[in-house]
Image 1 (cartoon, rainbow, N blue to C red):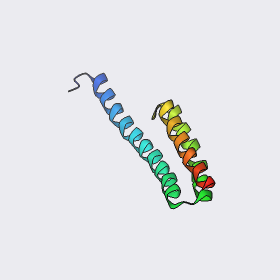
Image 2: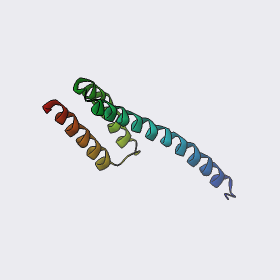
Image 3: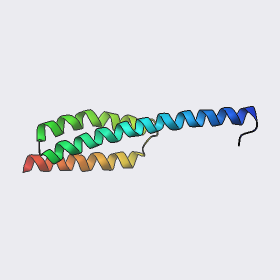
Image 4: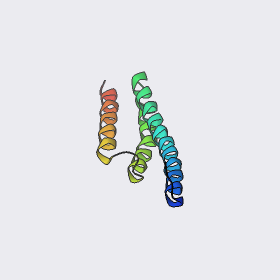
Length: 89
């Protein structure tokens, strides 16, 4: 347990930041699930629109340090590939 005032303050800050980061991470995952749902439904236009909304959110999560750059790049690439496959089908 934190004993010094400085350590107590740092513990409070860490807990506050952890909750904030968890909220942002959850929001980003929700947007990714919305894109996946549109893809699963087979609707190209709606999937494309959902991806257009999701992409800048994921990029901002990288800038905030919520997700790693390569993880977001991988997810965006896979979602785009699935959307392109919808159009081809």
